Image (cartoon, rainbow, N blue to C red; front, side, top):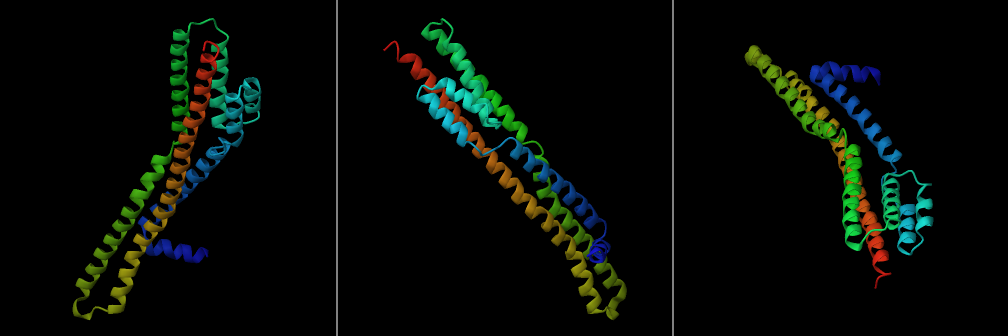
Length: 224
């Protein structure tokens, strides 16, 4: 295994060495991102959905207490919205003033959610860059290898060995294969991360909307 890897590096030259370094860095970033999303419990909303349901049915204290057990990103944001609305409910405000403050609160919570989600997208651009430059580096290695092969062919003239020529070509194409081998799995990982974050963004919007619309309804009902 070690010998085959060493021969691969010798055949591919410095381009393969660069691609190997990039692949190691990309793998480290992918593992770090996977841990980050898991730690933020991205995509896990069952307890938060139950709390929002309790909130909308009037069990507000029970809903906020239930979210204390959840350390997810969505739970922290929804709990902040619930606690802020409860503070508004305890203040002697006119209906118009309360609506203004609640709208500002909603904008603040939305901005906080956007900021937290933006933090989770860190290093995704770097991974996206890997998916773009890895095939280009592989192609560069192939072009350089083909130039060297045809230079050898020109120098050999009519005594050129077809087997040697074919060997030089497949060695040149080796770098393209290495570039694609790096880019494809990294591209899959980037797509998976972006999909998870997009779903998280949509889920947060739905959950926060459920909290704020329930708050507006509960404050309008006594005056009706």
